Image (cartoon, rainbow, N blue to C red; front, side, top):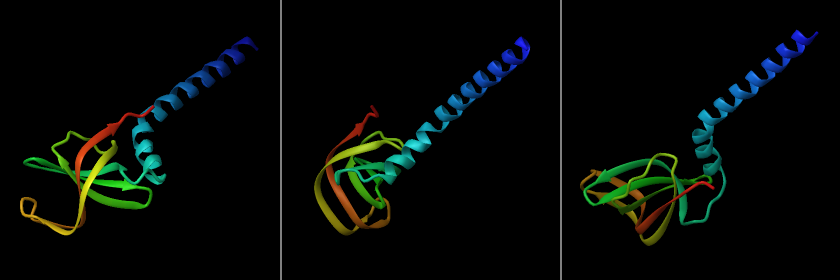
Length: 118
């Protein structure tokens, strides 16, 4: 009987430990999905893609169901980072000659801040 309890206890501990590892591995992916699903303040978003040029970092952000692009002074960011920015000016149908790309709407920002999860 003691052996049965030990086997059950060991199995339970192994299951909990494995679940914790799986949760830790998926945390960053889930953080992106959870954070992007909820509505953030208008001057914030979750980075879903980036493009770097001389002097600028273009970031596609997601905020709730809305996606939009910002252009900031060169910034080191990663996919999934939660960004807060200070908006300077919005331009419609902006063409970047460097990227050879036209953005339907591009928000130029003076500064960005990566928000650290608490």
